[in-house]
Length: 284
Length: 284
Image (cartoon, rainbow over all chains, first blue to last red; front, side, top):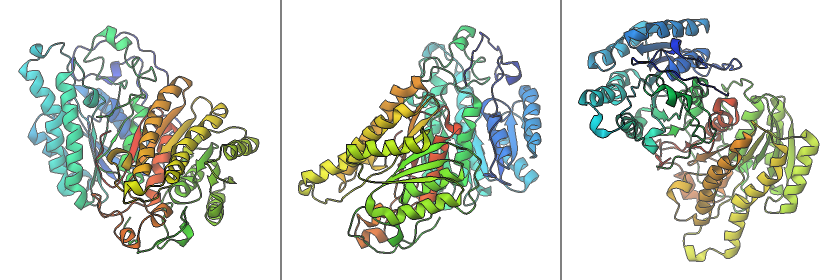
């Protein structure tokens, strides 16, 4: 999957997938479902675009109904995701709001259970990435916004969801290769991703007695709206050139890892992280 | 997948699956294929029994034809695997011999190529271990045999098959959780598994420009003939009770990770290890 990326930048966060050039690949045309998530219900935060959209569409093709959270300004992307999910013959509940609010984190879980009568899979995926070249230049507001979005929401959504989960259900968190490597210009973002990695490990042992599996995916450079919204147009053209595969990944190359972890295929896997990162060796 | 492992021991190595009680589960009845490996050719060492048999049957259900390499004393297990693969409508070439012998490896590669003309997936899975409570009791001969089978054979077979592999083909190696945490009575085995992990990472970098992906799976305690041929009856009874899930895994819970890595679902994965170990946290 080769990707040539022209220079581009989006001024507002979160980024909008509809404005990306080229459009990210959501799912391989040849991806064949095998009822791996037949009649399961999944809640996906940040499910409107990027990796979240791709996960929503793959889950639908594998037989799941989904609920997606996103911010008001991403409505156009969310509507597109809903269309894609419905084209797979499954339902998509739209839950716009601010994931930084504790009450909203509870509401999206309740709304999902009210709509579908149950919840089986939680994908904590919403993330905010702000670039700052120096530690001194990080406003406290940026620090809080990043932590509230990227890790507090994971605690809050999961806390609301666990009472509804049963043996065989699972939780999947989106961490990042930057959790392992660190990144000079993404101090807040990369440190929240480290927190997510350890949250995943700690929660896996906490929930193992209930038969609920908890795992994570640590993407490398994936072509999503997060990037043009957080780095310069010039950096965007170089995106993904520094990994061994010398190219960025597509969301369609990441989502199958979520299907694998969510399904019975991964019944003996908990507390682990999968690394779709184009070949970067991580060894924390 | 709950399991009650009865006390038992097999005196000769490699162990035999048909003598185990209970019989390992090599595939879930509900596992539905999705042409993920349609018309691919896969070579699986140690493919007669244990994890190798489960991988063979899953690959066949996903549409692949197979060649399996095994020790001559495992003929009965190999015949059973062949009949399971054929029941999926695929071919299974049987190659009995000693992987510690370079001439056997060359002969096996010759037969594979004359039968199938090329190879798409190589699963380096064959391994053995012998327990030694006292490090100083380990005969030099044992150390040599463990290294020759578990890692030197992996180099040699891969080297001989690579000329018959092309862009977008892949290699999957079986390492082990002991590669990461060591094992006090399996020092030679654990060391070879450390070598397998680093071999996987190094080879992934070496082959990335040829677009050949190299990954590994690191199983924890899995119910296979290797266990009953190594451990005492008392140890077998308690096997797997020390991992967070407090049970051993079945080969049927391992093989889907090999399918995932072998298929286009993992197109952005190389140099990585998937940990199927019942919840033991490892740093990777």
